[in-house]
Image 1 (cartoon, rainbow, N blue to C red):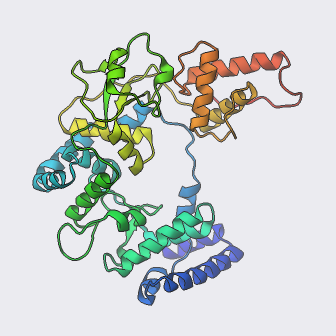
Image 2: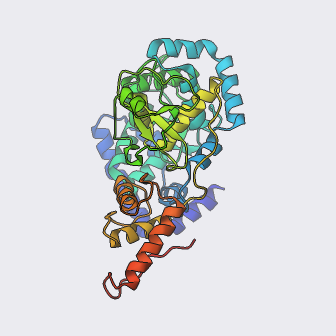
Image 3: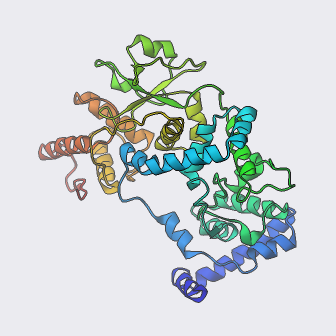
Length: 410
């Protein structure tokens, strides 16, 4: 098996690249030693390290299709996930209560992070962290970031928290029950069981206290939710539904926003925003300061809402019904949409198939001009509308001659 992997790696990393890696590694070892990392740790972690082909493949892999919020949620907040989480909460009730008491993070929220990250410890990853990080640090695409991660991973080994051979995790360097990166480990991880070392793999107290500490340090507000499902009035201005549009709760209530379950909206000290993760036809959420805290953990709106939803389900709440325009664009279609919008005067920057703020803003402006609900969401119907408008503009000769029309397989 090892010989086959090395042969495969040689295919991806030919002789000249392998020599470059060896040179890079030698220079890195000198730098790490100069920063105080012991020779024993450097030998244990890096003596036989080679570039890991699979890590490069995973780093380069781009999703073929965007994922709707409904699909994202359906794959992560399942009946099995909820049942396992409730069993884990019951089995570790005292531990979760203690973490909640110290950091103010509800047990169901903490368990939701645990479930989403590693299925409650069942899938913590099998990649050797020093080898993966060395591969990525040498690769060049995000070398500065991964070099910092590798140095901190070695410092963790040097401190005696884990042996280099046992430091396993995701291909990108996330580790343990809660998938901490090495820099996060060093900044926030805690020895909760008092054995003199921090073990995020084998000690659930260490893992949960570390997560609670991270969330508290990131600004977690005790007693406040992450997000709640809401019902919007019929005359709602969809342009107001943006994470950055924070308003006092009273303003939203005055405009007719109500809780989806018919109850009272939570009392919060900060401001709230309305989020439409699947466009105007999908579910609507009011998000609060703790939503921003979750976004520091993982900068994905879908992830943050999934934490909120799984936490509610673990607490015995009902899930939200699937809603929204079905189907999602492929990344090629989104790139075509970006190019078409730019051609039409709605700048999206470089067409890259990624949905960023500039693209969302361009979609909103296009929707306003054409009398569509201005939610900024790239639904298939919006793509079809833009294609039709772009084709008409081309037929009228509004674009430079010789410019190929945006296109993508449907």
